[in-house]
Image 1: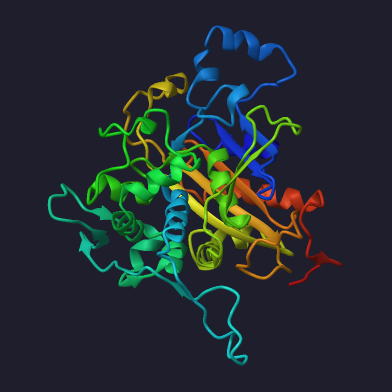
Image 2: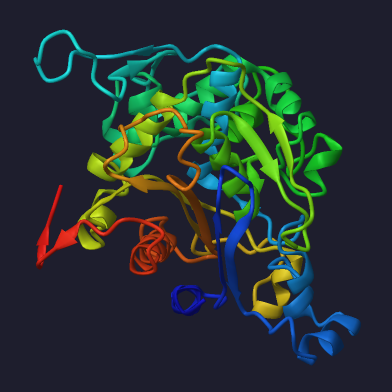
Length: 397
């Protein structure tokens, strides 16, 4: 909670939220946001009764943090959902390289994975993609801007390529996204769930620019931190989407829905997220906030979004442009002794944890939400949830 409060100070609106989930059970192990109120106290009751805007706005009332409140444009962290759809639809097929020349044993993480899309178009010097009839192209930025040519799923996640994931969404069409949501995976906000086509709602029709936007976290690509963590739980737990009751009582049953077919291979998604931390947009976080003994699969998200009506309490006008983007970071943390990119281990239910954080209008994903999540991982080490690879003042592999 202290780290969430510190992260909120980096935001124009002074807000942040983070969650830690056990993907094997779906239970929320920790959840904090700022501003917040003591649920055991009485201060929040009067504010809720009168509908205080800063308490009841887009950042959510305290009693419903796991519901539809607190929904934000997701940006690039939503690419993990699109990648999950690709695995679910059978488009992702991995190729494993020999393990560093040591015989014929395959490496733990796949070197490449289908599908492959051409990302060599350019618009104003930037990587771009467009189709006849579109008003403007979609573009890559920053790290992804230099990753031209043909990209596969692993490299597209590593370099966070908008135009690759836009092409993936066009290849999939809207129906697989809709099917995923009908299976119980939550994304979008109440307006998006109506599927009414307008500038701000709907997945987008086949071949549309809006559908391409949804593929990389604009358009219909929005969710709350808890919803993001649940989706990451599908990757971390062997394909199951688990949702516990909003009141977070331990005795209440949690639902568990199989999202991926038996034998589905998520190693390419994990390989891409590992690439993010090794040579992508999260590499600086891995260097600045080392966690010896722990492997972190990460994904940054930087989501441009105009002001909303609910943000008036923070001095933001509805439709206001030029705001700092929402800063997102999602991660799967596991002991580094576990096989890299390995399947979930049912006999080791405490091996992996899922973390997600958003700092509204906090800037780049690696600038605000990233340090928050890495700080959470380090706190988990200090509390014994994850191993500490430092012995006698020296880091062990």
